[in-house]
Length: 238
Image (cartoon, rainbow, N blue to C red; front, side, top):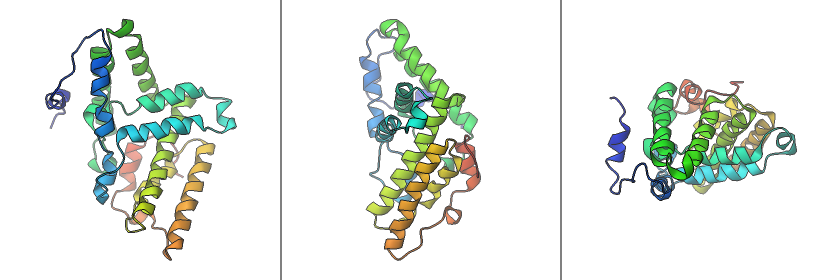
């Protein structure tokens, strides 16, 4: 089935005014980021979990906590902005996850079209189109993954996921195994982020041991490593 962005827009009861000189229609549309849930958790019956906006908010805070070895070589304000923008397209395309087996190229196409709509059709006439142009450029930088800032934010995306994984396992008192998400630790690029990931995984291991159980390993989970590798293209497999 060919994806149609307009099919999603047609489902919105109050469709935003296009080509407006006001940012208000755009502001209304991105409210969807506050209500759209992150899909990965739903497969484990966590149906009232974090929203996309929740995820991006904590990511933005994490960028501000970058260790000095990173702040000396990356533009942190740009990273914070990137963290707040990188999943903006999901306001319309939704949260596409590895188990859906949608090719990364197709995922990128859907999201690029949506960002063109958000930043062009909705913001193109707002203040000379400059805010929309900047958002589109920052999003593309994240997608291209060619700058140290983008690599850092990709790593932060994974760190936030690891944090949430541990928090949900604790919330459900070790009755839910979310180990498949720990695979993202293998895809981290920057050593500083690898160190954070190890600290989080050590915390997870200690939690499961406190329940007199061994922390589950991702090799036993349903989602294949290949699906994760296709989805999280950057980083090391080691």
